[in-house]
Image (tube, rainbow, N blue to C red):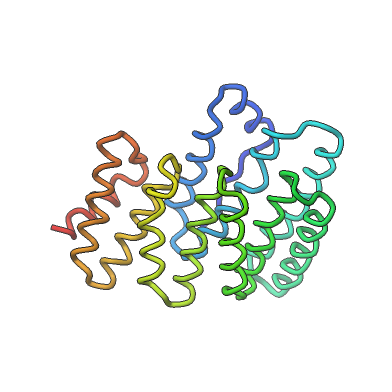
Length: 238
């Protein structure tokens, strides 16, 4: 499995100063979609995004610095758990405990909100898919205005894929652009929907997904890194 790209705090601050933070999020999403071919993508992507920019956008004080360091430590444990090996379970357990501590201490702050996602990610990676799905759905309900909400929404679909419920997962992917019109991962979600419809042999739905991708392309919202995959799917749709 590929590794999700990370950006340094300095790069995050520079992106904020240029008022290009949404582009920053989009770039991270595109990289991940191009390098990770697994249903875990939703969870891993959120893990990468959760530790970083949104927190910098909203907090600058001493408490924020403490929370940032704790998030970095928790995220490091989580990333180690993804590498596998005999200590993966221990790293996952440590990450879960760290995220829970952050959530308890900082509650509804940006750090606490990000810790919610961390806990969902740990549940997903630990094979507790139902728990992870409930956590992602709860995040979407509680933080619908967050830049991370569309990624949590896609992660809930990834959970359904892991539960071998492709039809339900495809419908969630398909509905993402309507629910989040400006979402950076709209094209990726539609491509996931198309992939699943293609695998199921549902030509009508495949054509619907491809048409939606075409609409994004007409709006210049089709990421360069996805264009070849969209072209291949369009050819399959006929």
